[in-house]
Image (cartoon, rainbow, N blue to C red; front, side, top):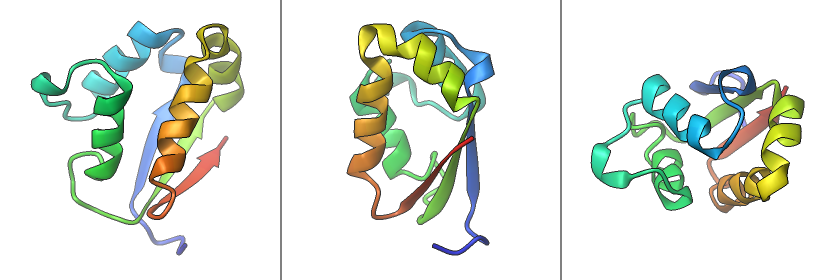
Length: 96
């Protein structure tokens, strides 16, 4: 994928568990209330290009190692990566 793609950033320093992840996503991106705090809602956000309809795009996950450590306890990290993988046709994921 090109480097001139739109870039969306998730920063692992801004959350430490599943609840704070969804709170961060709501505060960082326009999160339509009726989606709720679920992996399906996160998938819809990815599908919508973070509510911009811009696809393909780069998704940069800063402090991914911290996220991996903190979210792995409940397998949430693995589940998030699986959701992102479902949309890999138009997402270029960079773990930073």
